[in-house]
Length: 605
Image 1 (cartoon, rainbow, N blue to C red):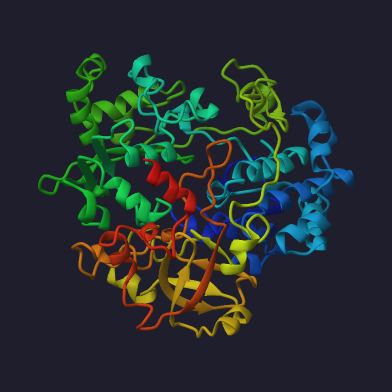
Image 2 (tube, rainbow, N blue to C red):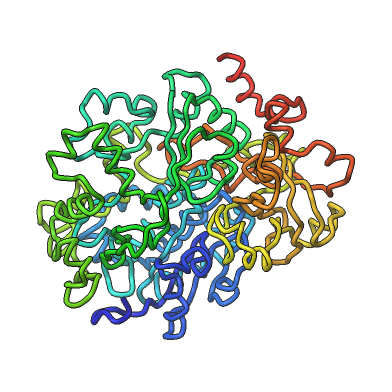
């Protein structure tokens, strides 16, 4: 991208709750940020942890997890009150500016600083830097997705980029889409006419969440799915999982998720190795092909690339082959009408559906795309002026008003809050002060490291040699008060359960906050129940909450909950979490644990 003729290095790169060098070290190309820094870009970093990037930042703010929207609204407040916004862009291309200005008026830097445990002057400095230091780019990760107030946080951040004119400009933010307009998202046939209206009506979550009812997501709402698994209403007879390790990595309240998944009559998993989920819940395992054993497309905001299979190992099949085999059994009329009988047919069909495809899949596969097996389409700036962002080809953005909506008309039409509104996390020193007395530390989790990709690579000896055990980062002042020594095993406990990790005492984490590893299991341990490769013993998702999403159905407080920490001893380690969950029925069966609402819900069912 830096070779693109019109590219300009951003004056400022805003990094909010992310660490791109670790989380995007692959083909998402997080390293572009360090290249831009060498060419003059300066950083503004918002994060509870100090990392390499924040240590190099012009402005670095440590905030209490879950308070992102408050800080972002305060930064908007500064930019508007100090008249630092882009008047021309706001007047021509933003909708709802006056309403947004009024909404942010109460969020002074002092108010946000009190909420977020940071300094008001730092908020002012960050806002001024973003508004005045040239173009601002804001790569973002998933941290705000994992907070109940996450939609408001992202709206506030993106509104700030809008009022400073940092959309579709060189060095700013462009609207991301797959090359050629290819549909590679997980829409499961939703827009292909594959599913009948009767089938669509069975999708879970439409009745409870308005955004789902209008097709904002092609997927069933996962919290409603969890309740269906628990209550058998509607009955869930079979599960089919490809490349996932649910209760180790992605499922909050791991104990609850495990028992819900055990209610499925017949479970199938596709994977390349044994995992705790397979060992504990699965009836049939399909061996999956590795990357060099599959033909596929790769195009996530990058060049459209064709990957060629170079070998086949025994009976392992690729995701694409499995989908085609199942599709021809379950919906032969559709697959036959499209001429899809092989993985190559399906990949060609996907490419041919793209409205702006330059080459066929076969051309890419054979390296005929100008002598390459990839194509990087032209991506001009300022497409809102030329009609490149709208299906109708008219100037503007792909919204009902044709403008960037600071006041969202779609949300308003669905009866949802149209503008960001700060809300405290479900568990916090403010919203649950009595719980905070028992669990006086704010817990965040989900940060990535170089050695692993979520729950993957724990079996690789060279990775484990550099990172052998899970770690929880604790401020030295907190560690002293807790009687915790560096590198010792400690219990991390919340109202839903506990897990153990090694203490990493560091000044890099703000006082009153702890940051724990996620995705941990131990392939070298016993895989039989109740051990399941230690899937629950160090699982931070023993503490996170299920079935309490934000009002938009997106976002939950996985990164902002409460806990306490204390040293592990032989006495308090006599019953490990794996036994507690698998043998004893889960933490909610123990009177010392259990969300009362969850326990009552279970009794009602």
